[in-house]
Length: 218
Image 1 (tube, rainbow, N blue to C red):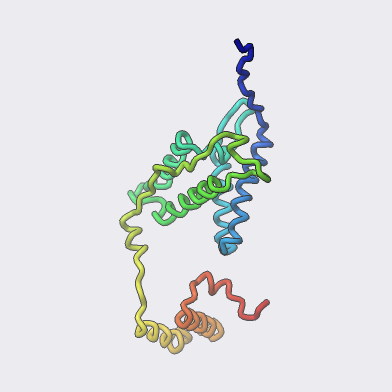
Image 2 (cartoon, rainbow, N blue to C red):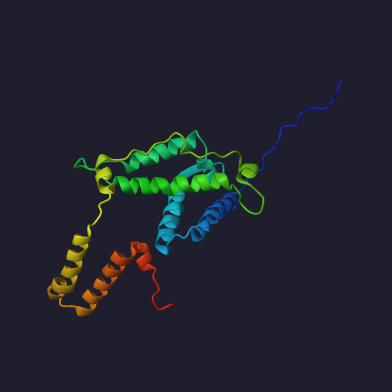
């Protein structure tokens, strides 16, 4: 008969500082993908600020005291999914006039920021080197699994796409060239706007592409 006995594994208690460092590194790993995805600097700034603050605002307590929540604590199908549902419910709060405090597009944008982070982290769950989140903090899942963010009926109307006919484009260009200058009395401004609108209508460039256009190659 074997005299060996099973010895329970002892998980080392990690300091808040160590966990915060790992949490920030995981977020940074995700932020590093923004450049390769071709996101604009404005989009990168908005998403980074939102994601950092989202985790900082959720406070939890353990034996060491109160702290912010960490990403692996949200990435599960139990408490994590509950937190996501609660967050989306708060975003959908109506004001005293019965109108939503935030537009449905804004709510979905915030939800998209989080869901994309969790999906990317689940696909590439590394902290540093080959060390994974699961090997250090336990299994992770996407907490958005089974969570739906419904589309508001008014948002559907805003999301519709309308095409401008050639006649309407010509009418706009004539207005900007012949009428608009007399309204604001700023020739340089009207000339610049006319050139931008002409460029958009002729090339089909998107607004973000126009903003990042470097005509002088500087």
